[in-house]
Every structure is written in C-alpha cells, then in structure tokens.
Length: 258
Image (tube, rainbow, N blue to C red):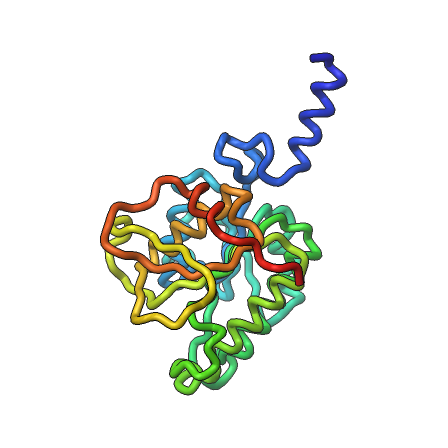
C-alpha cells in the first residue's frame, strides 16, 4: 500500500466513529472521553467505576464537586454544571466523545420534578451534545414510558410521560444515541443473571435489573455501532451473563428516522 493511500485510510478511520478501534467496534482508541450526568446516583456510581475499569477518561457533570469527590474519588474530572441551566453544559461537552445520562427526577413536585429533569434536563443535555459534536449519547430511561395509564404516572408527576418526551428530544437532536429502558431497578449483585433486550414496550409482569447491570449495558453500548439509534427495554432472568454484546445489539431494530 502506498504512503498516500495509507495516510488517507488512517484519516478516514480517525473521522469515523467506531472505526479502527481497539477491535470492539467502539470509540476511537484516543481520545475516548465520556461525560456522565447523574454520576453520583445509584446507577451512575457503578457506571463511573466500570468506565474507569475499561480505560475510559471520565468526566462527571455535578453541581457540588466537593460532595461528588467524596463519592467518586480522584480518578475523574469534575465539571460544575446543572442540567436545568443550558449555559453550564457547553464547557462540559467540549472534547467529549460520548455522553451517558442516568439523571432522574427527585420527586413529583418542585424544582426536581420529572418535567424539569427527565424532559428539560435531557433535552438540554442533548442540545449541548449536538452543538459540541458529541458522537454518541446513551440515555437511561424507563420501561413503560409509552403506557400512559401506568400507576407511576399517577404517583410521580407523570414521570413516564416526561421520560418519553426526553427520549424524543434526544432522537430529534441528531446525535447518535442508545436509549435503554430498564425494568425495576434493584441493588442486587450484578453479573449473576442473563440479560434480556427487547423492544415494543409491551405490558409485562414485574421485571427487574440490578443498577450495576444497567451500567454494564451503558458501557457495552459505547463499543458497538449496532447499538446506535436503538431503543430497547431490558431486565434480567436466571442464567449466565451475556458475552456476545454485538449479537445482542444487532438483534434489535433501529428506530425510525425522526
């Protein structure tokens, strides 16, 4: 291969998300910087740990860096910001390859209600990611967001309706995305069950998944182009944990174009 042809090929690989990666089909080898929103939450904390273990450079968007440092330690970069304040998000996005959001409402009413966090907060993050040229946005949403009569809507300020609006805002942003809709979240030990990935947001019995297992899906979604522009529900069942994530993601249908 000529030097000119080799240089052109290398340049094309650098520009293409997931091309010429470490063999997983994921983000480029350098840089691979991930911004996490909701990093100090019960899903965000194991997510940060897994990203670090996988060798990613991790930034976290937090309102109180000192408080967050006590939870997450010194291996991450702390960026002060608030998803309800778009002006604080642009600096955090600069240089990020990917964004993972695990944010969620703190109550049915008040400044942390679902409309503000699950819809406007996600929309603000997606808009900032689009403006910064972020290449992949992974959003943790919820199963049953399309079921308007679900009891959670009555109990928690239409939380599922607002989560769906947040999903739609991400889809409309133009940023390549993966939307993960877990069943009931638990603090069970991760890595002990088989993952189910399905689509259609069907009415089912009670389904659950460990928060750290949701974190695992987020990390795996970064690696495979087959996960992009997919929305899926997930839970776990008795069995061995998944090993072929590419096949799991490839079995999902891409979302219709917005």
